[in-house]
Figure 1 (spheres, rainbow, N blue to C red):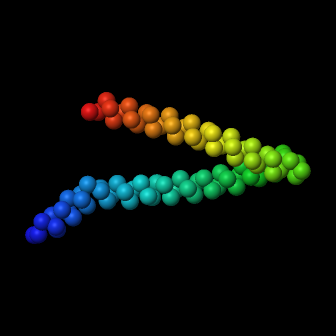
Figure 2: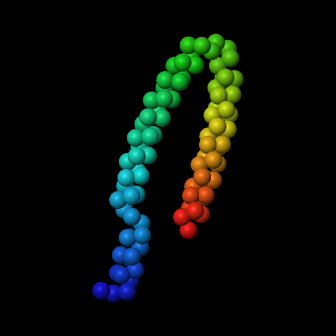
Figure 3: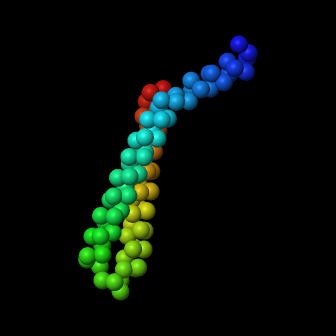
Length: 88
């Protein structure tokens, strides 16, 4: 086998193809669940928020959701960094 072929095989092993495919499948299910939650929350908002205030409420909800998402992502990334540090 040529050196180039060995290098390609080593890179493929590092990628962990099964892990990547599993992550894609899990992410897909998460995305579908998020779409269902989006519809459910939208219907709930339509029931309780008057039409005249709808756009303001949507922007406020979007800002709040974004802030919460950023905080959660920050906390999770710090947790993962700490976990990697303890493994070394």
